[in-house]
Image (cartoon, rainbow, N blue to C red; front, side, top):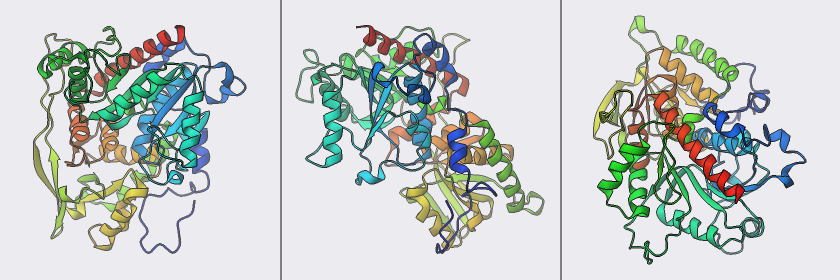
Length: 475
């Protein structure tokens, strides 16, 4: 896709030389994103080896509804969504994808960049429950959800509130097939006291047979306290003792009894090594032309800052100031061979400063932040060659890995650039973002664990999900 020749400001990073006409082909032909820790748990139940093998077999496979799926083109959504769809496909399920309603216009809910995710979908609907009145796309999605005998309803990764989770459980309970509800890689906010929603949880728990896999300690603690009717402190101790031990052999909790704690599903994402290497070489050459440490112009910071978080990033007289979360403390473990749990709660902040000549700005959501980066360039804060639009995951990873090799600090108020930096071994700090404190504090807490231990936590979560689906499949 060529750049618009009429665009007044050209931002760097669209693609390296000779890649413009083949980028979509590379994305499609690159090795399927897989989750190494999923192979063993899915192997014994695998009916299909990948999306292409579903041809002619979809009618024989149990069907799953993947609701609230983000396909809007954000690279973080791609990182967290792909491992889940890959897991379900390898476990032998046909997947119907119901798009999240984050964007008002249904026509903007499926991006042309969502190549990986769409490869796993048998059918795509541009709406998810709860459904409103009459729009054609909603009627079509609702008809499918009511008429098809889904084995499970999967609430896909991302933030949601407790009312929506409970409504999803109630909806599934009313369907003919009584599907299992699994919320995987979620941040659940506004979790109330058990008796504040108009029903007595001891008599009726709409999520009594649901599996919740939480991606940060606060969600795990509060959801467990909510569904188990335990005090928050007791629930926290249970989580610290049982689900945060990074013990992949620990038994899975009974459905509806507590949350399973894991890292975000993006910690299980594997990029295309070949495509990432191409971008790494591109940005290595680019960095050499942009910075010269010997002449006092070193590269010090790679900043992923969103348009809606200007309050925590200020530029004054050529100095960039950011409010960042301090790295969390890590609880000591009872056993020396275990890594303890990250601190449960919110982190303090501090201010860091950089000369504007030593920073690069980037975004993992080009549709939302393109204008913001263009404005930084127009104001003379950074040149266009240091305002980077990452249009695919491997481009973002290649940029971050180049920063790591140069000893550059990565700062982000978006979740998944921080995850990528942690996985790649780069120095990383989370920028404060007041609109999503639970989510951003959660990923900051995960940075206190080695990536290998987060993989262990995820392996247990995938096993629990596989176990719940297999039990439902046999029933």
